[in-house]
Length: 190
Image (cartoon, rainbow, N blue to C red):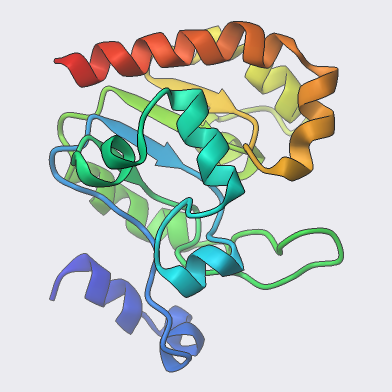
């Protein structure tokens, strides 16, 4: 049984499997870049295609990659903190369930020996991977990206809901996005 089937068979995911939902992730053995986000949105869960929404369009723009490079090259992996849509909350979606990353990420990452950059999208992935103090804010973490570079790059979620954050923090698209695009090009050129 492969890891995809193991995730589906996990009793913690029974409610999703009964609904006919599949875990949403991509972890090609040839991946050079891993994107770790929070959890699929409903549109992504229903389509089965990661980052298949406005957030994905912006993410690919920030990376400087085409849809073909993103989905078909085998160079980019996508592993969320939770493999299923967690449901609606009062504002946006519910957070990813605890325990999924702990259980599955080590095995998925071990199967991708050529990873050179891990992009941490949003605070859930950043707090899990970067050993941040509880007081750390997303803005502070992203602004200080160089302390985690070149292994990790923390970024804000590319959701249109973050347009206000992007307007308040123009340095992100002025400084970090060009650095990210250069690094992605270097990695993909190898």
